[in-house]
Image (cartoon, rainbow, N blue to C red):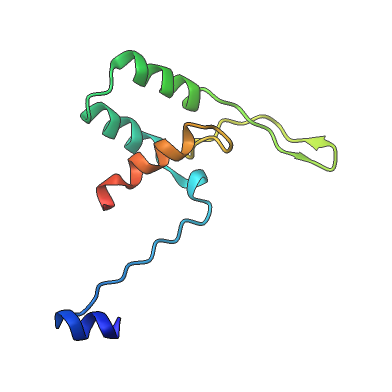
Length: 94
C-alpha cells in the first residue's frame, strides 16, 4: 500500500467482505428481483423459485432426524446454481 501511495499519491481503498455462512443468509427475494430486472424469463424465474423456495429440509444428528422445516433464507448447499445465484446478490456491490 505504501508503494501504491508513493506511485500514485493517492490513498488506497481496501474493503473486506465477511462471507461466513454466506449461502445460508442470502435473501432469495433479492436474487429473484435482480434476475427479473436483468431480463430473465418468467419460466426460468418460476423454475428457480420452485426449486429453491419449495424446499423442506431436516437435520440428521447422531442418527436422529429433526422435524422437516422450510428455510426462508439461503441457497442450497451443494447446488451448482448456488454460486451463480450468490453472485447475483453480490453484483450491486461491484
